[in-house]
Image 1 (cartoon, rainbow, N blue to C red):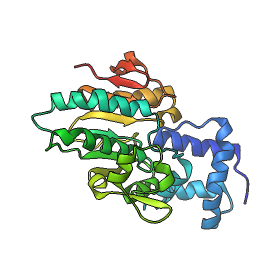
Image 2 (cartoon, rainbow, N blue to C red):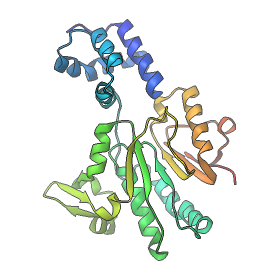
Image 3 (cartoon, rainbow, N blue to C red):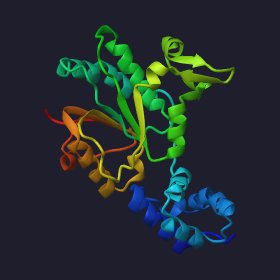
Image 4 (tube, one colour):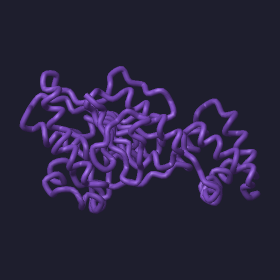
Length: 271
């Protein structure tokens, strides 16, 4: 198999930027080569140009799905950036209870859910909080561009050791051990999470605005123009008074998006 040439790399990264907003630096050439090499071997192709032509011509969507699964980075774990979950529990949920108490509905979107740890944590927090106020609909949306990690999220099966950061009561109430290695999220949680494949570069397919959006540790892969564009679109579908959570390693322009800064990586749409 031929090595990935600079021209081939530039074509592939331009395609990635156009389709998914991900900006790859020159240093990522080796990474792209290593991640796609096995795909070329499986397809019996001798060059990355041949593979790129195949990717562009495919009309089934299968090639693109496979490409996304190979290219995207999915790293997450339970209780990542714990202070966000504390703020969601202590400040955001009381606000939602006060503001939407008549309808008792929550509209929360976990916009980069990866394998589901973040969405599961948010759903458990809502169920725990609204125990004192029965009747709330905590159905939430969780999405990612990778079908591979969404399959894992839908399955809701995690290595038991990965649950160690969760409170003991949560592990007892919302998980059940499958065997000596894995634990399964209970249906009471999984059935309240709608997992969907959504590309943040595409129009958002929502009829109603969101009260809370979590989009953490994905926009770090965007350039400033793409990041600001996505955040402005988040702003447009956020209810007045609603919140946006981003990763601690990320930042957005307050003036350019309309959100107000609340605390590190937490923003709010003015009432």
